[in-house]
Image (cartoon, rainbow, N blue to C red):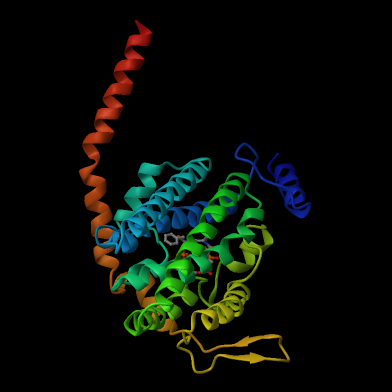
Length: 311
Ligand code: FAQ
């Protein structure tokens, strides 16, 4: 009966083992995973847009090839993640509809515009850097299909992070104007990158339960701190200043103190009024509607093949 199943589930979690699609799971666990994995998948897909904006304007063939490969990887990550969500009993079509109807979220970070090529470097450095920091612990998430998808995604994310950093190093060793572009892009992306980790722990309604279920392994603030500590020496090596006057090493805590992100801005962006929300969702809707004929043709073909088999 239900109680026995629940005891089994609790024991699996307590032993830090994996839950697989065929295992019984509480409705809340399923719902939380669908919410988080769908949001994550949508982020990868919407996240193609800010960088896609620069594919046609990449400064060299080499930079264009790298950027194309990265954006394609993001599409791939979205696909693995939708597939992981499907193991929980939802379908991709339904999730896409929710995204384009703005009924499901995607990461706040992708609602900011990319204004110069230095943004491509800074997205790799800070946005992929934050993504890795948040996602490496998800490789140990209790839900098998999500954890396994994360392993491959993290490997690709770490390549993405390095390509961004390498691009910035090239610019940092370039002209004064290029160094200024790197600084200006860092100034714009630093605070939104800190917001990727979610609200402060005290305002994070899902953290406690997600930690108890071994979905999340660290709180939002723990990961944000780790990211700040990781980024400071990287900024020094690049010769850029992080735009936070309160940022300083705290010897007692053996960590950096840092300023408070603007949480009103964060709330506005996740509520849909960030600088690029409307544009991002409209673009995704156009692409989805524009691809309807492909889905219809594929379905018609599959139906025809199935009918032939029946003959
Ligand atoms: N943006 O209670 P919590 C990438 C929502 S990386 C928007 O703390 P939770 C790679 C949250 O959903 C980016 N919404 O929530 C890439 C919840 O709303 P709900 C994607 C946010 O889930 C790089 C509410 O606020 N990564 O794509 C954000 O325990 C470059 C309350 O928050 C992932 O999704 C936010 N920043 O913790 C691609 C990682 N933060 O649903 C292209 C997996 C919070 O209750 C280019 N996700 N919210 O209405 C997670 O680790 C977690 O879901 C958190 C949030 C940590 C994001």
